[in-house]
Image (cartoon, rainbow, N blue to C red):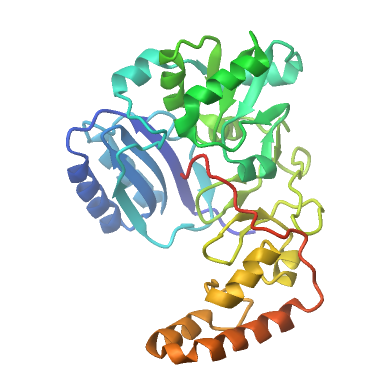
Length: 361
């Protein structure tokens, strides 16, 4: 068993920042100086971060946050922390983002505080444990592929839409659920907290957000109320929730329909669909999610190199770039290689399995 010598921090804070570009520069310098790795977004709305470090690095980083007028007293930073066995990021990235949650409109710290309407993990647990949900609707506000990999008991997906259509979505909820009370959840709580302000400003009542999101809940409770794995936007991708007694696999392989917790990406770069699939089946289908992606890849050669496929697609593209007359010859070589690897396997899906993304962390 690998030693858990690192900590993964996932947190956010809505706070009005006067000069976010300066904070981006200062934050990046400090994080790189101490050797942390991860991804942080800073903007006028505040900060959203997922990053990793060893015990000394994490202690230094927390001290840095606490000494900042903007980033001190981060909510739930310790409760949502996870012990891991590696950095799970290749480098440290700190970027400016106008909205730390891209919902199409900015919100202020004051609006977040005024309209916050949360349900504690304790109360959410009582609701799920009771099974008495006749007056409630539990909505998973994440992307469809995240929902398919894992979700809370009795939760329904929000449907894949663009969050910029929030007013239309809320009207749809009112039409479908009538006077029922709604509790929403997302991975770390950030999307739902911003959405709470938008919902309340639109005049909707009895719409709650799970405080701290899925991460805070599963770090507090190992009760089997979460089904499947949790999709995380770091090197782990598909994170096991629970133990041998409480874990339930609900993901279904897009190729075979068999249960799996594994998640991959279609290796045809223009698609890059997140797909739930067994590793063996993924390799059997040469990493493509559909017949469409396979056929397109043979034409434009936009194929991601993977360790288990020894063909160097980047070298092929570089060769064509230097000498365009080689394109047909290279296309033929790639087609022959892929055909040999695929063999007699037939794709279950004819078209790309890429979904419209609600939100990209």
